[in-house]
Image (tube, rainbow, N blue to C red):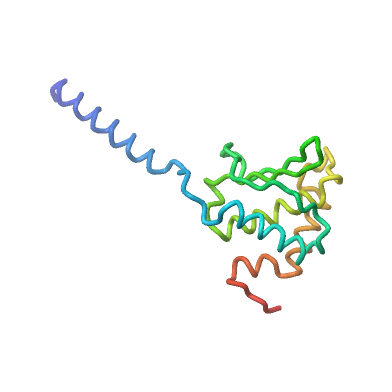
Length: 148
């Protein structure tokens, strides 16, 4: 095989590899729910599942850009919680709503953080199980399923 042919094949393979790998990169598609809608769902879940006990002034946005995280919850120095979703993973409505519930358990158990257990400690797990016992996840994932 001539050198020229080898070079052309190498270039073609490089172009094909680049094209195929770019198709697998997460996109920053427009999320299904706006920030205002997410805040509305947060408020509704707060009343329905937490009896209104969570802070009402939580900031929710799509500003998590680290692809290692689906979402993060932080507490600012002024005491306000900030929930940031990653639009690469939470663009779908059901995933975004589940993620809001997940992060609400972080807010609810914030003061119980234990360095040995991490943020998904036994208190956080109990919160998630409580939400499950209320049917919260079935309502999201099974089109508002109300059965037992």
